Image (cartoon, rainbow, N blue to C red; front, side, top):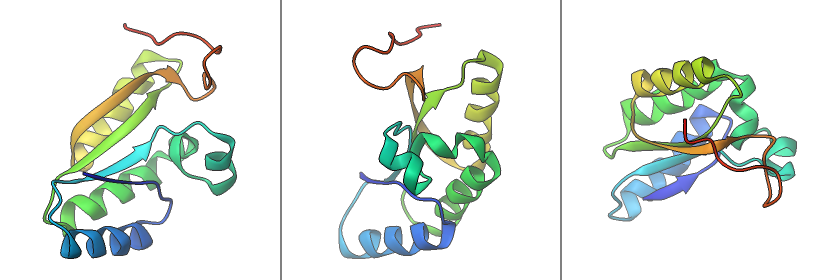
Length: 118
């Protein structure tokens, strides 16, 4: 599985297509959980949580046009219901495996809080 971060569906698809055509891979993973400052500056990872329609477009484009499964890694919202809605949107868009990091975007680093197991 090859992991990407992105904020443009067409550029993401083009990059993923190159990888799927050149290598025998098992899937494409979209990292929607990176909380680092570089992700904020580049507008990707967990900082896309503010733009769920864009995330939906990213996943739909990959799912519709690639021959391999699409997986996603996310962080949780402070509100459980919002996290569930987010997860269901990803599933509907075509995410076939979802990895959930049980901490919020603001809980980055080793001393920022423990994961929620609820």
